[in-house]
Image 1: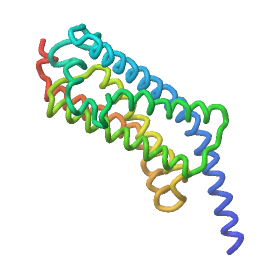
Image 2 (image 1 turned 45 degrees about the vertical axis):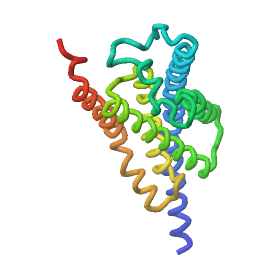
Image 3 (image 1 turned 90 degrees about the horizontal axis):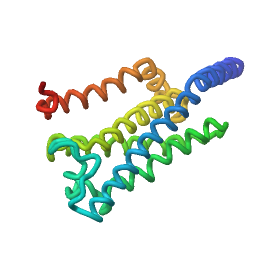
Length: 212
């Protein structure tokens, strides 16, 4: 019996090593790239917000049309959910995946509790940008260009980190890992489906943007 346990443990370690070598490095690149894109977009949006406060009559770079504009959203309560401009959250928050990704590339090892907290934070950011998207499209009726880029950065960060940490046993080696391994073949389709849903909603809610 003890021998079987040792063999099972050895096999588990081999799977961990194989899976880890295939996933952690690509994940780190994704975190750095997507995090940088999200940070740059959040910074650009914050700069535009500051410009609008300095001169309310100024023309913003993100004001493309009455229906594609960030300036039209600045005075809405949804744009300052916590009492300060939402881009501040993005500027601070998107530094996290960048730093973690660079750390993994440098060879850093993080404890399971760290990955769990990270995934919960990424889920919170994904849920937040999803809520903002719903508010923007169904309630306000205006699309923010920089916000779209921020949303696009948050989506793969959440889905990829969530699935890979489950599959690598950061949430345990029982049912949670089984779920993660089952999700792995469908990770890319899930991300594509998330983007596709956003595109379909935009086309449905703003058909005049695509009229020829």
